[in-house]
Image (cartoon, rainbow, N blue to C red; front, side, top):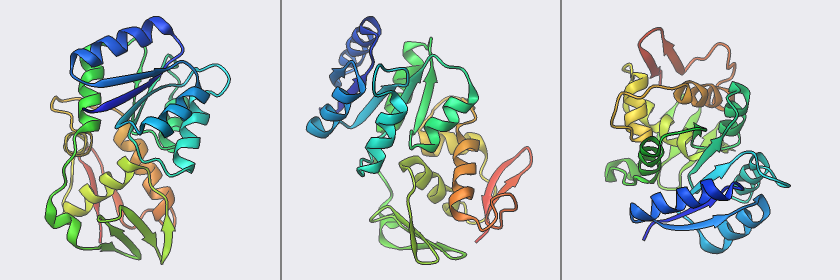
Length: 226
């Protein structure tokens, strides 16, 4: 059974999340503070973490940083009452895979959970190292090197990069990327793609302000120049 860890200090909200997720067939564990959440994540090895940013003591940002620093690649969906763009960007830069802003609809949340849990990669992708410029991607180990140096990417950053590479230089729209990488089946658009693209440029381009490989095609999407 797929395991979901909810780290949320609002007990009523945590109870509601647990009920709805269990109705969908997930095994759910709940922690009400960041320290307990980190311990449960290490002990239970969940398939997905729902993480509130406004936690007492060890807040969600620190939890997320700790998870990524210790090598946890579990998908993380952040839950936040904050509507400031900076908080969302900070969460994504720390390694979150997606976010929802409170209050959110149950159906939207469940759709995002399902999208993050969707697995499966084409076998052909797993066999070869993918290259562009001085960057190498190894899908088998999900590792990326730039000029031989190992570069740490969040799970969705890696998948987004592979999706662009598979476009073979063609334009890939934001909507296509949302569907392919995040698994959304409806026409949902957000700044998630743009934020992840900016982070990929920061990590992989010589000059992120003047990218040579991860290119924007105005009003159309992105393409990867190999």
